[in-house]
Length: 205
Image 1: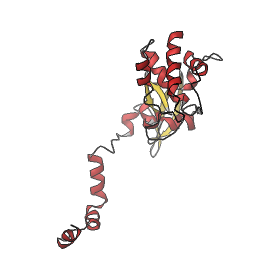
Image 2 (image 1 turned 135 degrees about the vertical axis):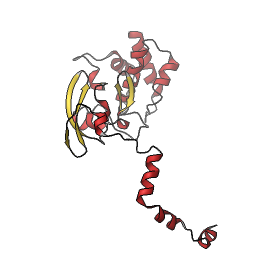
Image 3 (image 1 turned 180 degrees about the horizontal axis):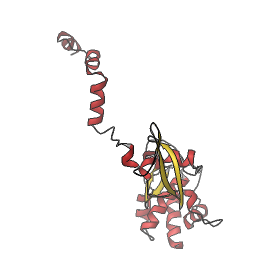
Image 4 (image 1 turned 180 degrees about the vertical axis):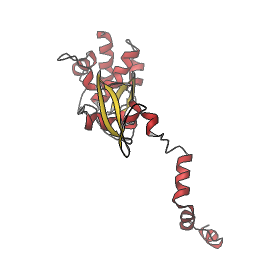
């Protein structure tokens, strides 16, 4: 097969060389891998402060922030590095483990897969926004009482997914609780206790 390509003047190296950067770039864009709009579309009221940066208005845990962010910065990065909200953990950084889960407009999302500039005008809730002063949220308390945390790394993401469920359904079934937490990986395999914590919090509510 390789000899036939050589006989016809074709080779893998020659083919790639012939494509060139422009053709490869066109192929990537056409397949949707670079689905990025201009910064103005993300932040109509923000003022550009330099190449690849904008000022974005974020509402996090009921507080308003105006933050300068790079257009490529994820919500998780901005929460941790710019706002100091480190309860949101970064695990895989590719939208698979769920450790970075936060709630945006009532829905749980992976903050590592959301650009910060997309968050203009949206309500963002992180683990730090659940407790009221010294009083824990019922779901946080239920995690403690049901031994939900083990190493603790995935715990904030698990709680945020559970909280999103309870915001939509105050009395979920066990199957619904398991489904709600299915996007959060637990390195310690403590799933049964985490599900029990969500159901206990529902009873408390």
